[in-house]
Image (tube, rainbow, N blue to C red; front, side, top):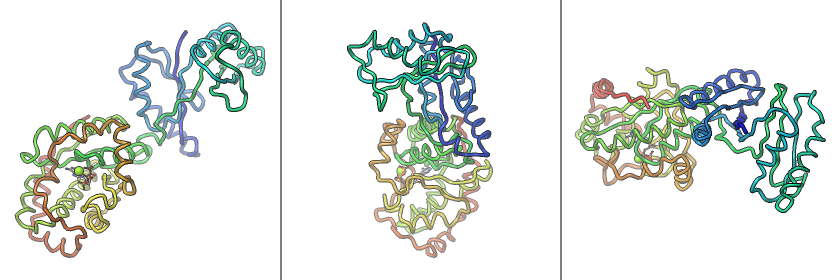
Length: 385
Ligand code: ATP
Ligand code: MG
């Protein structure tokens, strides 16, 4: 029996006038995610259909689809030529090995097909019970599962059960473009995933302090960016050399302001690159109060030198909840690899927790801010992931 995957959208149908645009984006995103896997793709009224794929590609297709934002639910279906015999065969096949209560729901788009929906449901239910009366019984209200039968106008019928939850969210590209500050830590990959899921297409930027941080630390960030990219239709990572900036700060500024100063450079460079690439927002993995550098005063200090909105999707999250998501998106094991991050180099023993903005601005005057930024930006490496 031929198999198919029925895909349903999520919030898109709420978006009135934009609906066409959202649908087109989602369709393209799904097609891109399945590139290289043989299949046919059909857009139907308010759902999509993936068919004609090799049996052994079934799991891979599901894995890819599970990372496409905007998919509400999907189902595995049998596709048969519309006839009662074929429908019986598919429905009983689906029930193989199942236990509990069920009902049959039929939808007949092809009004020439007879009998009518009610009668089909009744007959199919009867067939199932005939075969599996020991394990299954009918229950119309809140059954354990529903066998759905869609008799299409084109002479084919879908038979399926269970709507499996998709990723949800909005199609990537529907909410503009952003620049993710990605470190090797747990938080920023999760932040990227969450924003991508809301429909923002992301670029990523990473500050690298060679030779204080080595090749392995960079590889780790590449690996994390790839993972986030799976939810983002791929992602470009820009690696910025940060060593000279850190050395300059170390030399010219009070030790306890190291992190505050670094953050400001990170934000400035991120914004400049964002402008170049047409990104409209900066995204970080900061969470309020998580560490000394994530107080509202620190956020004020780093916001004050950029005019782009800074999105912090994790701002109100507890660490345990962030870790849960990082495990789900499979970034956790990479994030906890013990390589140095640029923020652990020159780390002061007692960082300022509530940096005073005036003081910070005054101290910064000792630095050739413009020269340092220009130098770093001229040496950016780009990775297309
Ligand atoms: P993470 O788990 O994402 O590393 P964190 O809890 O370690 O975050 P910080 O070190 O204060 O927190 O970093 C806050 C945010 O600043 C990060 O989430 C990330 O967005 C950004 N950031 C930190 N270090 C870097 C870096 N080397 N390159 C790019 N962005 C960085
Ligand atoms: Mg970190």
